[in-house]
Length: 208
Image (cartoon, rainbow, N blue to C red):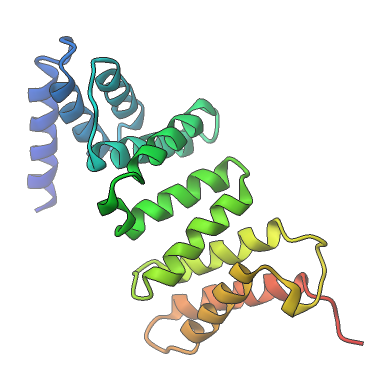
């Protein structure tokens, strides 16, 4: 099955490349999608950028895919391609103008990551929190809660304060983590809960 899927991706890439030199937005978009599926993030970004330059208006799928491509490119370059973050932000700004993307937790998670990588902690916390609140059955919820908690603690000031003075995103995420940590079905839940609990109490003033 994997080989068959890989073959289809390769075929799509080869077919799209036949006319990739022509500034045709549809062809460039298809090629960008295929390159992203093949984990060639730099090529995906180049083709999707060219699609915009060639006049592509873009729908919800286009802009969320373009944003993801730039985020993946940034991570793959270990942060060297810093301009990828700005391109990702602009793409996600347009992606969130399409209602269907607001119902996709993976899109909100990508937006949160883009903010986090840029050091925009409050923006990251907002979008991590959206996932926690709106998608309680999301597969990656434990990881999202942990990221929400750690990001919330990062912009919390002063660094050590009373528990009830912590940002609401920290309290909400820690509560969900505690509940997940009590489940026996997944050891990963407990692991995330333990890490989150340790980080939280490092920021809380001891009782006197």
